[in-house]
Image 1 (cartoon, rainbow over the protein chains, first blue to last red):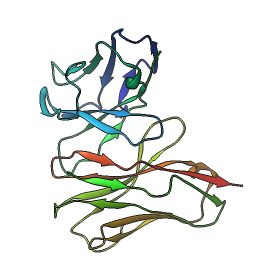
Image 2 (image 1 turned 90 degrees about the vertical axis):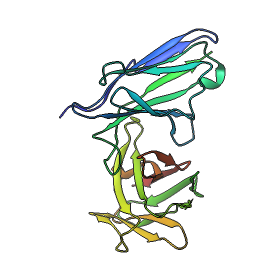
Image 3 (image 1 turned 135 degrees about the vertical axis):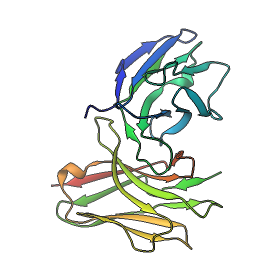
Length: 114
Length: 113
């Protein structure tokens, strides 16, 4: 089966600009996750969707970050406006459901904010 | 809230030898899962091995095995017969009942020929 797809793979923007990332999960996977991985650190969960509803977004900086999964399949993560500290790899993952299903990760989008 | 600590930022091992990566965690939950993920330079995170907290038997997957000490909240990964392809970042992760993962800071493993 096809894996989790993400685009773009790389993005360079200037601070205060906006950026959006796209994720297509594995077919049939109800749960989708967005992680932020700062260089040299482990991934940090930003938001978790179950179908098109938000399960947890407690670590999402809601003043500048937003995410949606309108039809319960693809998802977009947006940053507006970007700050220097947002430079990171943004990973998308999906699973069939919640516990105890394995999460499958996409290749990530590397964001550089100048 | 859960915390996961990996105390070894970097490690190296000679090809064909054995290496052990350390991980400790803190939680008040009783039912949880622990994982080791591998992240090669290409960045795709791959599951290496998992352990259910209610199982006393340590998990094994081919050359990879864990030493799970629930009382000590310790979860180490042993890689036997190390191969060049094992070179990667390794992350220990804790999963709660809601399927939310908390990752450690990672250990960079270099396998030398």
